Length: 632
Picture (cartoon, one colour):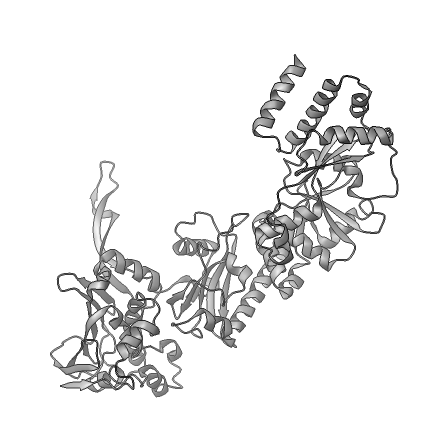
């Protein structure tokens, strides 16, 4: 018998190929998903007593026949009668899944909601890669087999077929331009991408592995390692997130993490097991990986599934942006398989899921901070960038994290914000009543500045995170009378402005002279010469950077945008601060040997630059030669 597919458009297939699916490879997910649905439906009918007899082996087979240029997907599921093929395959407007759900509504023996298939429209994705598709099927109702054929237009043929086994075989005759889908490596890649957690076993070819022999022994009497060939089973049908957390240990979660990301060799910091059934359905496991300064959101992404079928790893609409640093799996039947980014960003269910995930992550962090505080502090360097990102991005997250966020000082002591303010307020409050929080970004490079601050009795935080420039800016905006100042942004005597002032030992003319002498030795596009009357113990020359300009430049380089973009292309600029009270500076001015004055000032300048790693190339070579000459 021949017929015509009942569709309003003259030819549905070009529409399917062009617009319905954006990616050709999706066809395999759709066809295998249909096979899984058919198998799950059979299990449900059997449990309800509506499918008689033994179910037998329900493994789904995927096979390639390169000689005939065909790809086969074979299930042993519910199958179809001739009338059902006519209805569900040739009348696209009908939905087999909806009718299936309606028929068994109210049955408590099985969670039928999880079995809603896409048989119908999804089947036609096979024509994206095929110039002909055949169906060989036999219903569990023990009626005659059916053979359906279509060459990719609205004409089709359907006839009885002598098929002995229950189930459905889809045969796709692959087009010349899609011949990659006849290669084993390609099909294996797609099966592992889309089907690795589907709930029915999927078999694809054979694979070899080494195992202990049950019969052969080696010279020591131990089981001999032998190479064996086995069926290649693609998927883990009972993934960890479908299990109860009470039956799982940390080792199970860590093992699953490496199953998801085999190239990530670090252990995750901790995990969150999600299991929500109201007001939406969501299961999954999220991991906090070790991120530190190496943020790569393109690698090892969170994976989104719908009933154990892979949907996408572009989950920007499902989880807040700052949680893109997490890893793991989310599975929700409330998110359709054929999903677009614009859909994700506008759908109400998705927004609820996003909000819930934020809440659960915040709860987990609070619980660890309270109940496992030592562990929380030990993992702080890895957690910090994530928590800062969240606090910067989400006001609700900020409100929950502000009391558990900790600052670490250069002695590796931890303080909450309130505790730290109490610690430093007596000594580090300036003449205007601002509490000045001093910080370093590199404890080794800024060692001299840190020591100078410690000599004054000041405490110094270590703020070496990639987001710290943004974070401290936010903290200043949210907390009046709080100022963060990097330890090298000014000389120690001016970092915290007090009322007292040390008088200069140089006259105005002498101060002007030494400033002009130094200006002649530097590139004025990079260095600004300043003079300050400091105590004699302070260095004769200090390199500083303006706090505001440096911070704005750092924020712009990280992607601050907005007003920060004004500073992104500016070259580095530094201040060279001359201590007019240092004995060496005084002695230079008393000398009548101009060459000696220049040499000594050059040496002091280069020592200051060297201490900050700013002396390089020809300038460094000149310094070394001058140092050797002075020693001689």
